[in-house]
Length: 150
Image 1 (tube, rainbow, N blue to C red):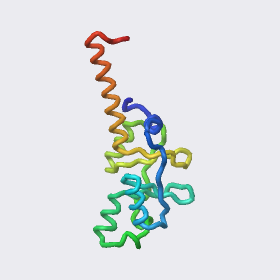
Image 2: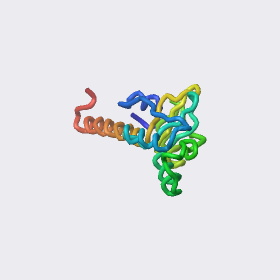
Image 3: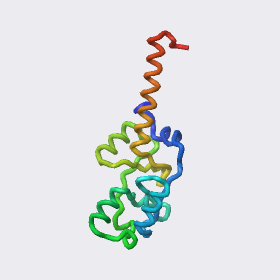
Image 4: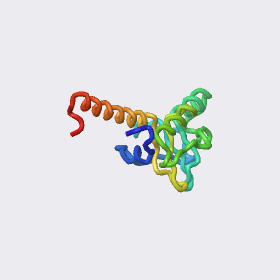
């Protein structure tokens, strides 16, 4: 579990591999309901099997609540972030961390051949890195104590 590992590896290790989405003509209220139901902070916006946007809690807070709009009357297409920054399964953990840091977002769609194959969150990447560090520490402790190699 290294920074040079691919996002495909991260996706394979995730407990939940389903991609949750909403259509652009649905209400923001429906989107927020879905986020709450699944305990997530963002939804992909998909139209005709194509990724057209992403809607996050941040979009909702800044573009609906602060602007005094109604979430039941506002459509997802009106507040979604577009165009969407995405990566391929071949991108590395390090590259994705850099992209997410640069753009200041926490969710990154993974697209292959114009189809969404997953989403990685900043939390997924941090968990991956910490697991790798824990493994390295365990190996070093084993080496120091003479238990390595086995």
